[in-house]
Structure formats: C-alpha cells, structure tokens
Image 1 (tube, helix red, strand yellow):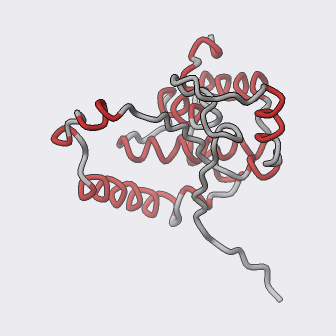
Image 2: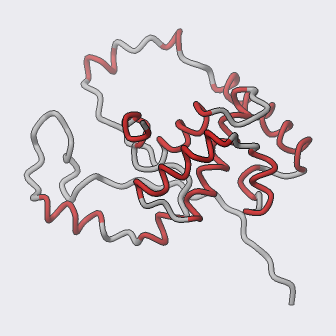
Length: 176
C-alpha cells in the first residue's frame, strides 16, 4: 500500500505557567521557577520541533484595548488578498505550498546567501535548533518573503522566521 501523508493545520494555545500569569506585569503569578519548568516540559522537544510558529501574546490592559485604532488595522480582505497572491507565487515557482517542500528542495527554493546561511547556522548552534527546526525556519522565511514580494529570502525574512522560534526576534544581539 502506498505511503500517504495527512495534511492538517494545528493551532494550539498554552499558558506560560500553571496559573497563567508568568511574565504578566500584574505580578499575579506565584508559581516557582521549578513549577514553571515542569509545566513547560510537559511538551516534548520532538513535538515542539514539529510546530512552525510560536507566538507569545501578552495581555493588553482594558484601556489600551479600547483605544486601538481599527482604521490602521489591515482588514481580513486585505490579508486574504496578500495570502492568495503569495500562494500563487508558490504554485508558479514550485507547484506546491512552501509548507510541504522537502528538505532537498529548500536550498534551491530559499536561495540563502552565504551570510544568511551563517546566520541560520549561528542561531541553530546558540539556540539548539535541530535540523527539522532549521528546515521549518527556512520554510517560514520563504513564506514571509513571498508575503513581502521578495524573490529571494532576505536576512529580515530569516530573522522574522527565527523570531517565531521561542521569541528570538527580540534578541537581535544574539546574532551579532
């Protein structure tokens, strides 16, 4: 029987600690560092390796939430249009979505410069990224480049993709 793959999109949420307030400016969290570590270790490394994006969403104070200027926000129709355009680019370039590219095809599709290869290698070493995680970073960077209209993956695209791996985007000095 031929080998088939199930294609699906997993979206998950997780609190930062058992009480849910670790890192919150309110100071409500009373969890010990050991409790937080044990809580976060419930997800295995191999499972986390298979997740493309990690996004930390901080709670907004009510007054900030109520003052948001929706006129400046991108509409769903605008986002949908950008995503459709990026998908068309992907299908023209490689006849499939970036998410299902093979490891072998990533080099040709991403066209990383030597400098960007070094950036990814440095990140992999410093942050313990597996080969699978590096490939996922490359796929995300390629998608970010497509959404930005870039023919090649630029260093900014790669940095943004790395930022989706455990918040590295806020640590640019880590790559200096």
